Image (cartoon, rainbow, N blue to C red; front, side):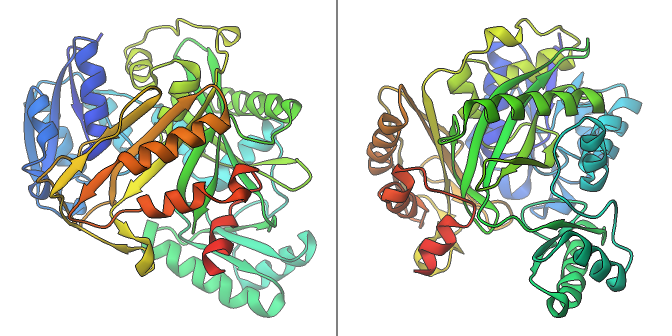
Length: 447
């Protein structure tokens, strides 16, 4: 087992990894930018090293500085968290060349699955259903029109690199296709340095369901069942839950088995997420793989009782998984609300600033994952996540009731947050009836 781990991230996930390492008897080295110099979680690490100024491209994304910090801190491994360098196969390769363990998949598996186009090819090889679409990157506008006519309008243009909704456009007909292709390509190039675009048939009002997987270096690959992430706005998740409501048991089983097949085909190990969309008829289609721990991993932890961060560390150290698929039995229902420093009443304007007071909710079945404390200044340079509120109860109805109570208890004074939005969504009868899809929130907001 590793004796000392560097955490190549910040905020909530950095604190999460520090806590897991402490319980495992592993020392930690936290990196930070000048903007995070006063973050209180740094005091819980055994050592903290500044890697540069506030701008992420000059600190958290600088591979040379992160590796130097690991060497100075005498670390045997690096945990990348989520975001930043977590899905950068070159970073994983550099860790390997420097004889530093990477707590995540191999660079080869990450490269196979990180590019959405190559991931789709692997999915087809593994017999995993994919949305009908192009066989590869679209070369030009003429090819885009030809392929769109073959698969049928409307179509969805997607960047082969990155995520978060960038480089995505819907085209309803020939006339809309050319400008959509140009816009998606330009946005993908600006966001990811890769202008590659592929095409899928547009699925109207799908649900977004993802499968949590966990594998070791000895050939074992397991799933920890699924999460429903359909409650989102502009491809940014707001509420996640497990199990997915109104998902047929045979569909759930087939989807989870498909996720395992794909990851075995890719030679994947560590924690990861295989994402699917489910259409109105209950058919599921593969969309992408997140080769890292995800923001919403606590949802799966609560329903399965498995600590995913500790599992990641054990797998990276070469240990065999201590469980079998038959042992992973989901229990109860879990919900997670992402609390961001944004003002929903002002078109979700970011609200960085000082938190004057914060009172975390508690009680049976309530978990609050956050690095924020009173006096903490939410910086404008990074993701606006303040914390994650997660609840776990025997039934979905009880989980919703507990989440409403916990949201009303949560106090974050000094900045605007998305708490009022979450309360409004949880009050909707459509949400209670699980009549949700990926555009549900946007339709409701527009109305």
